[in-house]
Image (cartoon, rainbow, N blue to C red; front, top):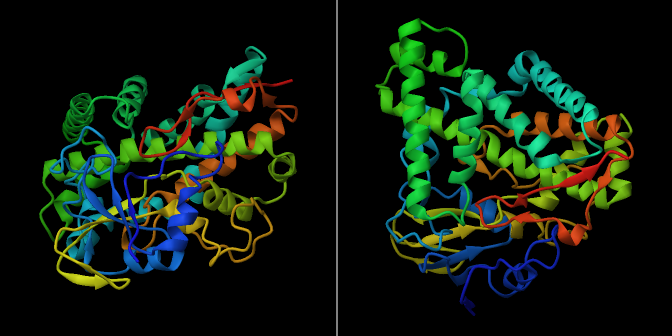
Length: 400
């Protein structure tokens, strides 16, 4: 039986748990009919194996998917950076993505970026240590560090980074009118266009943008300046917003769960713990949309060309078919698989950078300030819940 839901689930029982209705949808119907915030109707997939199967099905495409999660967007409004490789499919997607993969590999990060990340975190902690006892962890750490890291990757001039921070944050704010978000996107594109021209005229060799300019000359397919503008803009925004949300929500979690916090303060390796936080929190709380490229059947449901299907990462990562006691944060889970970064060919390109930043910020902060605590009751912590990514708006903490 197909269940029809009047709206996308958004009401959370707590700051750290997804809407309870996801569990009901997951059990009642693998392809639930849902009305999305922009008024469109489509399907919501919430089971882990079904989500993985959907991401691997070539009949689902990223190209042309609408901005379903925005209430004031009409059905023709496309996702941000619609012309970038994240909204392409097949060989077209692959040829653009491979321009970037080397810069985001585990090996490259360890050899070329980890020292910068650690040094940046330490510098922030030094400033925090010298400041007032209470501080906003989001503004003073979670927002700033990822922004500086992606700017370092691209070699954005230091004097430009504050303005970029403001505009890209505005662009991801769902409470901001669609017309204003489109202006923010234009500002990003215009900035990257100017920066590329500056690097070309200077013969720059440092940073990813300079490398892309060189690949533009050497690639076996045409790469236009506008292609580079869209890639640069995408990386600038996506490279810090998601990580900011994950770092802030992780810290809130650790400050409210003493046993979990101890794992990060101990000085022991925390790789498994980071993966469990990614699964448990799953900041992409609206899900990832795909469009049916043709008429076909999925999970026993006939789909027509252009039907909208949203794959819920939150639902999948709390699926009891996949995890024992899925609503518990358990750092002892073994061989942990999750879809916090998506799955398949469109899996998040920057996931290894994110892991490095999350690990460095959480461990260094809790080791530097072992008595760190919330400065306000947890119920008063304002949440960033009207954006594509879920996190903490402000997190006031005290060092002692």
